[in-house]
Amino acid sequence: MGTRHWSSNLLFLIIAIGAEAGIANVWKFSYLAGANGGGLFVALYFIALFLIAIPALMAEMLIGRHGGRSVVGTMNLLVARDSISPFWKSFGVLATASVVLILSYYFVVCGWMLDYFVFGIRGGFRNIDAAGAQAAYQAMTGNPARMLLYSGIIIATTAFIIARGINKGIEHVSGVLTPLRFVILLLLLCYSMIFADFGTAARFLFHVDWSKLNATVVVTAFGQAFFSLGIGVGVMMMMGAYMKREYSITRAVFTVSLAQGLMALIAGMSIFPLVFSYDLEPTQGPGLIFVTLPVAFGQMPYGEIFGTLLFLLLSFAALTATIVIQEPIVAALEEYTRWSRPTLAYTTGFVIWIMGFVTALSFNRWSDVHPLRWLGVDSTRTPFELLDYLTSNLMMPLGGLMVALIAGWALSRRAVRDELGLGDSLAFRLWYAATRYLVPVAILVIFYSVI
Image (cartoon, rainbow, N blue to C red; front, side, top):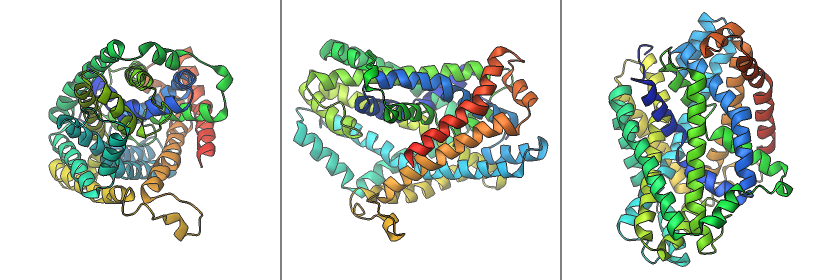
């Protein structure tokens, strides 16, 4: 396990960018920017990236390389070797449980992207209007078997790639798909610049109206910056575990964070011109991609081609993320069982697919099921919404807080300083202070605001 390494620094960066710039960076960033003041949200997002997300990501990656094992194995090793409290073993359990639960619904959402790509290939975007777009979305979410079919395709592909190993599987696929995604994104950007209202979109995304500043926008932007990097669930700890000693964690984290931020921004600059060209609603929320944009593609020159390309991009984004998110589960089981990697990849994939039934049914047959009411809590959350709330609002912030406390307080100052390779420089002292104080406080504020 500890002998596994990324083949090169460049491939490691490409894989990390591919994992970080998942569908949340195209889909969620765009609708959150639309609903939270455009340029104000973007400015706060990048402030948050530097103040809390980058220090936290450095912390998670250095813990991973310091242990060099799966997330569970790393925490067990640090307790034994670095004499940190046995309590911190609980992070390994929390992180692994988090990614299992996240994947159970994330695979279903990834399946939507593939579904809409097929919809585009079959000419679904041709002359589609608002009623047609709404009907198409309802037809998809109203059919659990269809959702489980497409999520199953994503899961089987993910398992096949993981089964081939780190170098022959994950590196090969991400090494091709991530650059290809960037090319498709640039094509979509050029398309929007030529055929859509690029000027209005640019003003929306880059004009900062500070008069709209409020606590909700700040917390939303900071939360997106923090959680879009997947901090707190052990994914980047696993990425760090496979890093060679000569790679700079600081340089890697800055490169990955800025690249995924840039891709999110380019996605917004590709999507919002289409929205403004046809007086559509930028504050649509999650339906922006599935309900609002198809209407624009239905009216624009070559819209069916570029609409299909957008969902191809999102399908690739899904795959480059899922192969890295599932890897920590397989790595942990590989350390503690005698099963082969292929067996673990396919078995865990199958179990997660079965768990996905909960999400697939939540949009139709179980849409009136509200589990918290069984406990006497007055809540209308469906099983899917409960899963999303549990992982995004409780488990991830708790995991992120534990990462900051482990790197900032549990491990020795010398251990983290040597891992970062910054010496006792000003850069190290700023990072150390941010990790010990700023990141935990910011997470607690985000945590308090969403519970």
